[in-house]
Amino acid sequence: MTRKNRTWEQQRRVDQQQWYDDMHTTQVKLKLNRKTDADILDWLRKKQYGKGTSMQGEIKRLIRAEIDKEV
Image (cartoon, rainbow, N blue to C red):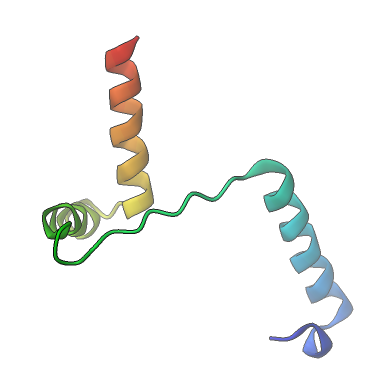
């Protein structure tokens, strides 16, 4: 929906979400090759659909486990 087609309330909600995201989040992109990273993608897909978790959640879990090992 474009800005022109939104009601004032809808646009306010979008603006508030954008402000929150700008202030409180950082986006990190992970680019995986379907051929050379097929093992990683397969593993993530099994985790995602097997336990109902997201790929993002699974990646965060793995990073936190590595952080705990280092401490």
